[in-house]
Amino acid sequence: MSKGKITALDLPMADPLPEATQKYFDICQEKLGLIPNVLQAYAFDVEKLNTFAAMYNDLMLGDSSLSKLEREMIAVAVSSINKCWYCLTAHGAAVRALSGDPILGEQMVMNWRVADLTDKQRAMLTFAEKVTLDSHKIEEADRDALRAMGFGDRDIWDIASVAAFFNMSNRMSSAVGMDPNPEYHGQAR
Image (tube, rainbow, N blue to C red; front, side, top):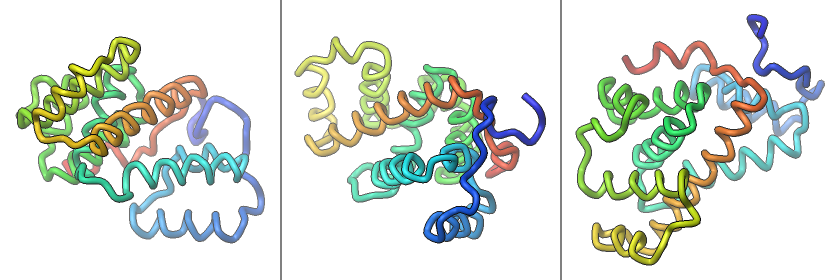
């Protein structure tokens, strides 16, 4: 892929962007210091972008008893299994930033099982891994294992939702050759 392209596809952003989309991008630039390439990639079709962003924002930033760090940990564990270059780079940076621990971010990207995690976090990521690899084999015993660690049914829904979203997102990113923003590589190190 040529330098400067966001994906391997030739799908330019809508021009001009609707006012609400431009405002959203301006907020991203202000808060993150960049406009995530995933958002720019979806901006060829503003309705697709809005749908993607609404789901992402609800799952990753909305109300949940899962912390933002735990949700990012799920994103990285799933993305590691799927070997998604974009999401490992972007969400690995988020784990580093939210945890304040660059080693944890690298461990999560490489192999979450080597990370210094709580038993509760390990149960959460084991479930997310099963959602990723063998969702058809999930049984009540898997949900009961989460309940035994203190997760409620809403938490189980949230764990499954985040894992499922990143499985979809990983596949899209890989299929269209999405490159991560270069800025992610140096963040929170």
